[in-house]
Image 1 (cartoon, rainbow, N blue to C red):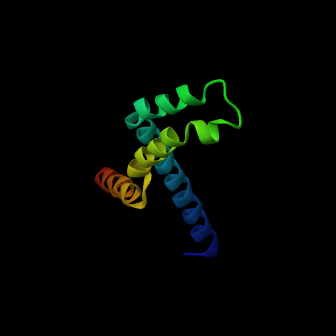
Image 2 (cartoon, rainbow, N blue to C red):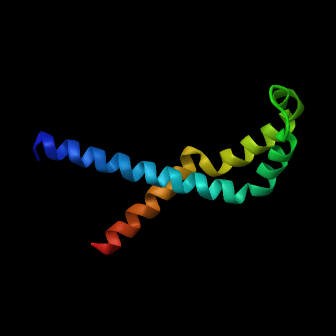
Amino acid sequence: MGIREDAAESRMKKKVEEALRSKMKAQALKECDPIVAKFAECAKGRTFSVIWACRAQSKETNACLHQYTNDEAFAKYKKLYEEETSQKL
């Protein structure tokens, strides 16, 4: 493989990883929707005070999202993608 092919493959991998991360984030938001909604309700009508007033909801939201968007979860998405693409070939 030449330099151009390596660069093209690298760009393709980045695009695939970006798409997988996007899919992972969307799934996390779906799973954490009730918790995110509580934070949004707390933040409604606030500006700077949201930092202090909604700290508990923010931490709860971040904890929920983290369990669906950590490195381990991303590895699962990558593995599923690799399995799907290998089956198509």
